[in-house]
Image 1 (cartoon, rainbow, N blue to C red):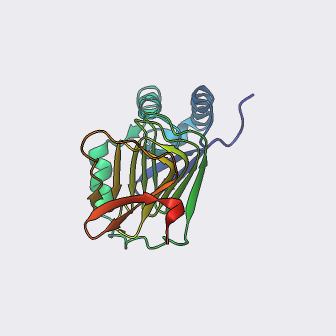
Image 2: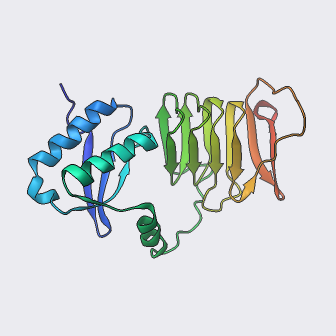
Length: 212
């Protein structure tokens, strides 16, 4: 039995936004998308789809849904260039300042390769971030597990943001416009929680439990 209300549609002046609840089986998501469109074919005929939002869809799965809507139902799905043009025409947002408090997204479970999490606030992952996954936040990124993917905190310009993890070993770590440099040569990675933050124009990583 397919769970109801996994998918929600929201109309905007740029097109329809499709919000999909995370952590559901992809075949169930696809089945419910088809079911909802079939029930309102006349409404969706020639509709413009701006984007699909779902934290746990891979790039390939999202592309499959877009292709399904475009080919089977003749819906117009905006390409990345069109989305960028619309986004650039919108007023520039002020830098998110909610570092010690503010809106926070909690995600339970492992973030797998190919997944891309992007949130305009703080992100807390209750699990691991695997290599090939990407986490981007306007605020802090906190991983209650291993961080081995890409992490970009303070993505809209806040250098006060930080990245912390129980095991911090990202493929790339960035805070605002500052990218962390990997140490030269071999070194033994500490197996304790660590915190990364910007000092001057460099990202410094230090033991979290020794903070003052």
